[in-house]
Length: 337
Image (cartoon, rainbow, N blue to C red; front, side, top):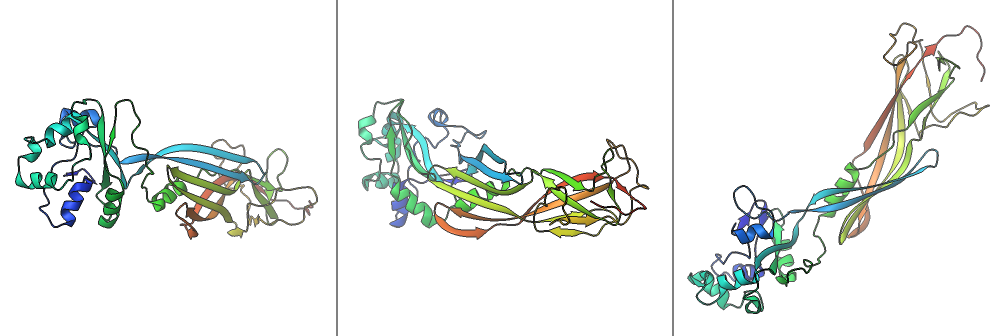
């Protein structure tokens, strides 16, 4: 039987199919939308049991800023499972269905299924148990058949008594999915744009003079790990360059987030030249003087590895942008730093 987005097949049914026997076998435990199924897990609006087909990944972020300040973060996000153990019928329900004379023996095909010895081992021992449940292997419908076969064969049904934990198994989650989720959840502090010259009082820089630019507390490197029990993927990213742009200035690409100005500096790894003053610009909201918008866009390169493959693989380049309003003035005298 197939649920929404998932293929629900028992090991027994799998063997029947592989053996080219009739492919209609008894339903898996708790998969028919009955009250028993509802007790085992969530139920959709059409009455079909919809055991959770996602699990929770832990996203852990560590990194450092240009000031050497470390930062960390932890988040929880859902990720799609590939295969898992799903809760099914109680011991009594399964026994009543498959016992001699039960509903499961009412058709030739299902009776043949039982006759092959494909029922859950020892199911008779739980014939009167109305609280314990069978847990059976399930796989999402997009999982390739060979992967499903391998999972079903290695994860036979397990009976869990009331009050006992569900079977502890490693989650079957695609590490590429974890890597993408890690990349999407990178928390990169963008920092604050600073510049020099910066005239006291107005913060203005000067036309036709190198304006040294740096981003205070910008992130320089980050590592994000997304994990579920048994599988993890780690994204490692670094700032590769930073582009500066502003009206009436030539675009500049810097190799880093710039160098904080110190008295006596005569050069910087990141500088831009404004060719006109901002005197003819409007005074924007929150500003005291006419300004131009300076945009700094950091370009990030990243690779990922996983617990299943240590070989670094490239990820799509990401960018982070921060802006600042810069007054630009003109002076008629020689300016020295």
